Length: 333
View 1: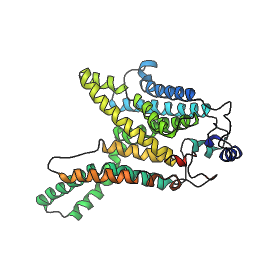
View 2 (view 1 turned 45 degrees about the vertical axis):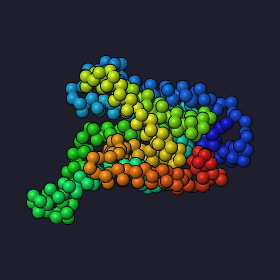
View 3 (view 1 turned 60 degrees about the vertical axis):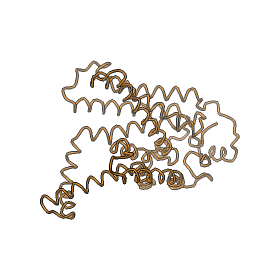
View 4 (view 1 turned 180 degrees about the vertical axis):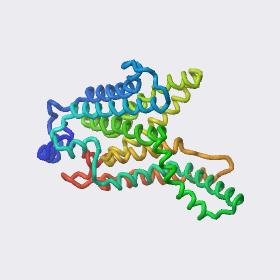
């Protein structure tokens, strides 16, 4: 069936009134949707190695130049994927805001798309945040014993050094990779492009939530050769490391897909992606620090309890055509 997102207003109203409307001849089939997703995955990975293997450019002289090449490659593959996706999807409207809306690129409900998913994601890291807080307090106690500074003085000192820290981060290529380029390009390709394709191809939402991360994890298989060759790991050890990474990638990819489908806003999985890159793997327990484990358990219970309420589609979208959400899948929960 034509998906409501890609119909003209009149057709969308007709499909809402008649959910049994016959399938259009030029709708996206499941096989086309899957093949398109596989093609975008392969292209994204291939572009990372294109400067050296395809264009035969000389090896970069520094790590910074190497990362800049990868930034450009990832940006090119993202733009190509967006254009390719627009050609495959049966989009009926050429209006700019409508086209951007297909990819979840919107100007409305910005604060909701940032704050709610960020708060929800932070609950999974309650143990990690507790540990960081405990280490920060211990560090302050050490400074207080050494120079007698109060907590207020430490806070003032950190605030004064904040601009310098920001300038340092702005010139740090790893900062740009972990918190800007990787989240933006990966969410654009593996969520904003693939999810509309799979939904339009007739896949159920639950299937999409677990199918999309499969493509996302495949894009990280290239880490196997990098870890094996650069770190001189054995094949078994490299496989175990990459297997752990892929498992975490699938879990996060499912969560990011869930956020994108529920909110219809690319910002939601984007901020969650950047936050997870910053935090790393959640801390489950620390020896002789029982508060960390308690915080982790409490955070996970809160996360499960708030997962659906805090991602209610009507928190992020206006009600149109008697439907609370951007894709017309309000009832799946």
